[in-house]
Length: 367
Ligand SMILES: [Zn+2]
Ligand SMILES: [Zn+2]
Image (cartoon, rainbow, N blue to C red):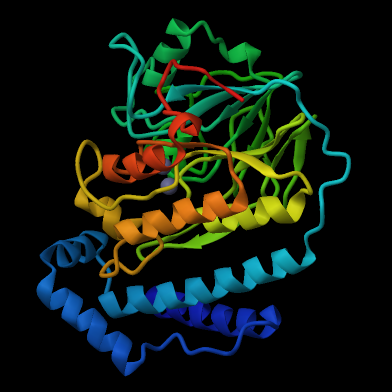
């Protein structure tokens, strides 16, 4: 009980300090307004899924909502501060070739490959091979679906120069078992890794390695860098996510995203801030579920969209995303099926037609 009180006090104090330091943000109370309280109450009365979820997380709904309000405020302050202080990348470089080979995602090119609700993409440029995320391995198998797919696709661990982890969720770190320990894994046990540099979105560890946690945008190698970590307040928890940016010669910037908790809008704004080049492509996970099916259960619409659980994403929201990409001039688009539903993906496919790229395990995407 004492520790709970202490936690709550720290959160409130942290919130007040951040409000003060953030400068741009107005002091706001984490305490719910009458309207907010009655919206919450109404949602709890009509929605048994929400009640079950709150039970599952074992938290007081009012406290969850207050924490979410604080997290929104805190992440707004960080976002505003970063957008005002970050500058263009210097000497970022370019790559002539960019190839993305999905090693893990939901759909596969053929039955010999494993699909799962996670992300692992192998990115080849002129000079480097980068592994972006490590899949989910939900059954903690050894060898994992990732390693099995790598073998079938002729990819070995020693070829990888860099590993970039988008965010510390189990479908990107090689399993919840590893993300809970702030680490990651290719398979059911942590294999020995040598000569690989790892970039993580928060402090993470790996036996024998020293992962680099860089909250700000960072060049990784010629023509490749990160967006920096963009905080994403989620109703049931909080996360920070980074995406990968690649500068393709004569084309522009290609952004490769993990789960998309940072939102497509912020990803576009961040890429525009860091480069003069146009944004040529956007591919990866964007967490846009508007209907259920396959692995997209009802929980996807409640837990990780960044919206309040009783204000889920709609078709209009997806169409807004399409409009944003069109207005920005983005040419190539591909949406991961690991965290978006078929209905949302169909909207993007229809809008971008020949410029849409399905993200399918084993099928290379050339840009
Ligand atoms: Zn994900
Ligand atoms: Zn996630």
